[in-house]
Image (cartoon, rainbow, N blue to C red; front, side, top):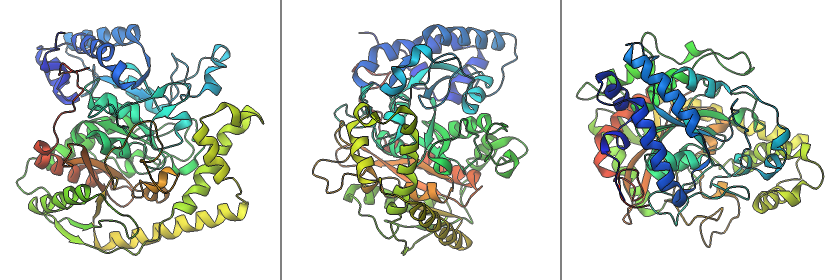
Length: 490
């Protein structure tokens, strides 16, 4: 078995385009090696539900011509990328990893690209294919009756998390350095934490979405990458207006001018103490979580690293009540709305664990919904008050490392709901704040641990600048996964 040369599979998106500009590598070469790596490794990971070799090759050839003429579209032109199978794609059906849609795909008409997909193509990126998600992206692990179980590159016996687990597994394994995912309760951040990758849930509405998510204003779209600087570059492509998103916010509300996110993040990494003057609150548990010992150790070490970078980090005791009950009302009302068009017998044709969850969370009234919205508003006030005193909040991304694949919760867990083992993510969907997961270390058994940095709404740049500084300082703490395009193992 031959090993691809590290000049492609180990490079970040920005390193790839630097090599393209220098003429030492071409988008066609990078794309061919990515496609070969997918063929070799995806049988062990099941990260892809669709691979498009011909479409990818055509896009790569077009990018190669632009570089030859000295006219690339931007800093991501020719970079291989994957798309979560939640976003509409004009050239392929979007099945949302559900048999309900797959059974009717022959009659499915062509569609427009979703805003994030259109922006990705317009940046010149080479779309390799679409990545797996649980059915309709409803839970925090990645398996579905349509596509089976997706696995973690650090250990294929374990889950990569979800719902953007296919994207996280692909990025972690070197099967393209960029992906775009959705996050309605932690869906980019949870798998980033489990796979040692980076994911940003931007401020709500900054990255336009169409069609509107059935999970309403909980749902965000954001970049999944190996580095924060790549995430910043991808954000520069994704943050642009789209008339189809009625709830989008103007790009100028968060995107820095001039130069965009990437220029501002890179500028911040060039100083000795890049976080000087920054006040960061560190909460181990938000007042209601319980952490695995190794997770708490690594995130506490990340807090000390942030101090060494110039920030003033203070451990705080937050008296927040777990908003899970309110979140469940908002979340499962959305899940029920997804399924309603498929008829009264739909429960017999969906993921059995989704059916069980809807049975647990089905007796909601309009009053329950209004009460949940009130909880959401109160959380926004509480977190807004915190940010009067602190620029950022630091927490673990997840309180536990990855657990065995094929189950919604860890073995022997006392609660059947996915929210019970990932309490630190969905709260910030309710408040719509930017939240970034950065790999900060590993457990004693070698599994990645993620640190989560949260800012007030529209402080996306600040979150990324702090995350880039932290990642640069701890990069040697997180080894490459066992299953990777630059390794022999498949």
